[in-house]
Length: 199
Picture 1 (cartoon, rainbow, N blue to C red):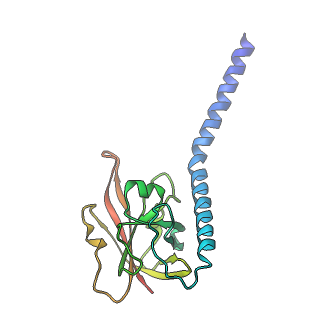
Picture 2 (cartoon, rainbow, N blue to C red):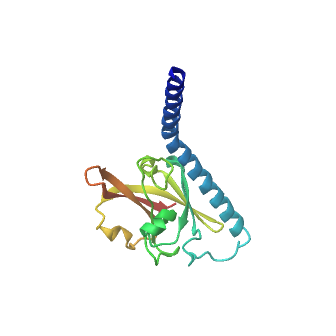
Picture 3 (cartoon, rainbow, N blue to C red):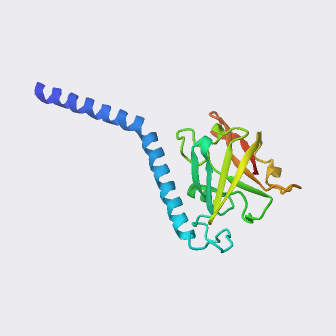
């Protein structure tokens, strides 16, 4: 009887250790899988668009199709971008245009993505690593556009003026993610805005 109790305690101890290792490793495994999935999607997008060299690129009507991809090397971000609007359903798919009527010809192209406190590779979680002067690349079809971050600031969720077009000769990207998580309310209180101008 004593042998069975000792074996049971040993098995329970091993199981507890395995559960602890799994819980510790899970965020890292999830980050790795997210990164690999994004790389595969981007690779397939590049293959699919390589034959359309002279064709004008448009944002797909199908919300499940990529419109292009965004790279912010300093923040270790390389992620697909999907059509808008940035509804909860669409943001579950990935980073997306903030508005439904976004156009690649707009002066101000707004792109929104989630921030997740438990993962560094999930959508825009790493975006705060970017600084004023950081490069941003937005690829649509065979065209790779280069931008430079010129301003970073917070706004309240209801302050949507950042989505508006501006009188400017330079096209800009407005990257939007959540900021200032309130653990008591389980809400993100602000939106962090990164303005990147075409180089």
